[in-house]
Length: 171
Image 1 (cartoon, rainbow, N blue to C red):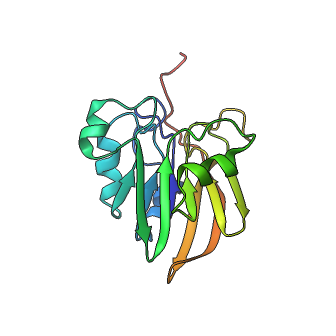
Image 2 (cartoon, one colour):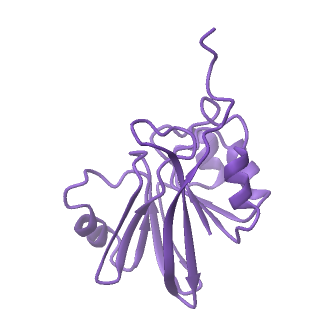
């Protein structure tokens, strides 16, 4: 499965970047951790695979109307998963998310644009970073998760090429 967050369309996402699309073509599920900004991005992603998304602080009513709640809890092949856009400050994140989502074994979040993968005692928090707006990070990134029979076998944060068509031109 492919995990995205903070695509920030249309400023940074005009259309799916080719490097991201190459991963989406083999996805069986796409998770989006919020700040899609416009619902047509979710429609575009849904052309690749089913999408589960949460709304972020920059998402408008069209994203909520598309079906992105503030938080989501669901199972993926028996793995209890939760999603939220903003998990709060780095300090205490793992314990805070465990308290907020006691039934989950994986919590996907976004907001910071900082890739994050932390696991303790079978509980994992995972932020894929942003595929389009790396901010102070060295690369734009996405997440890839392998779930089989209720077990998260592998979680990876993968650098992707920054889209050539970014934001307004400075010329």
